[in-house]
Amino acid sequence: MTGKALVDTNLLVYAYDFSDPVKQEQAFEVLDELAQSGRGVLSTQVLAEFVVAVTRKIEQPLDLKAAQKSVENYLSSWTVFDITSFVVLEAVRGVREHRFSYWDAQIWATARLNQIPVVLSEDFASGSTVEGVTFLNPFAAGFDLARFF
Image (cartoon, rainbow, N blue to C red):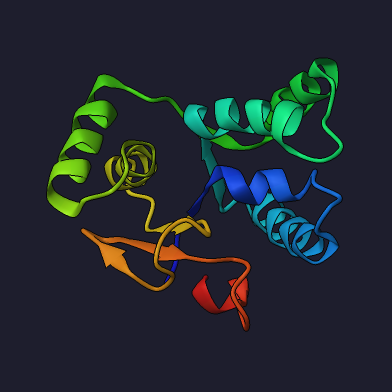
């Protein structure tokens, strides 16, 4: 498989969450490889969810200034897709036809409409493919990013 991978919120958040050092280390490794290779992409949805999660939901939350700095860094160094009206409509179809939750459907729709073949997330069935988008869990045993690119 070649191309790019859309990173879901949970992968970003684990990089900032000290409560699970194993997942934090794996998140760092995957994000570093994606950043170095230029294969990682984000969406505005992911960045918005990231801010909420790292400032409110992790054990040692970031202050808003640190969260803003992280978002600015991602915006300046990663490809970031906007959530458009087409993405919203496609997400609704994803809910209706594939029974995704709305927010998961929006991740899928963003990848599908921007021709991103892989979503890295622990929120989907790892290894499943829906309309050309394959979901991979970067925290699954034996996960090796190099195997997919």
